Length: 176
Image (cartoon, rainbow, N blue to C red; front, side):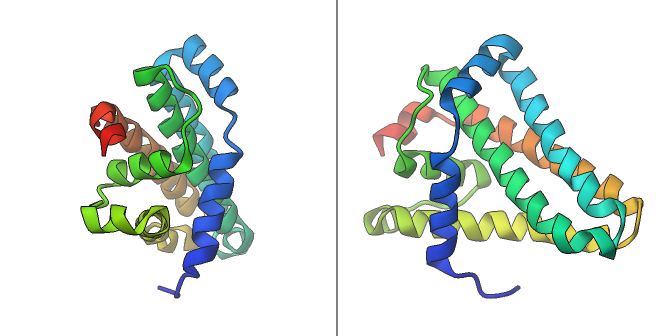
């Protein structure tokens, strides 16, 4: 795996967080319910997974980066939706938000990481996201099959993140 520029990744995650439309997430969760919203985001993530993999190597060049960005955006939307569903808050500071994303991915956020701050936690989250999203890229080399694989994996990833987020004790996370 290529070396990742830690500062660039943290900046990208902060950028994605700052561009979340909390009011829109709130409205859609209120209208669709939390499970419906998670399914909606999973379908949006699946769309770029299919597009990135359907043409094999030809569409992978531009499709995979766009697919990763969209999948992370959907993951962040689902995270905010679950926070809203559980707490009524649809605006969360980045340091709390990224900690919740990390816990939903299974990242061990110990006291030492917390002591060093949000940059360390965001770096751990970024490594886990890149690891999970890049594992599935090889299957996209086969036209058509890659589209089915990409869409299915994205859909399952977002649904699993929704389930993991719903199982978190957000009150305990906010206290840490």
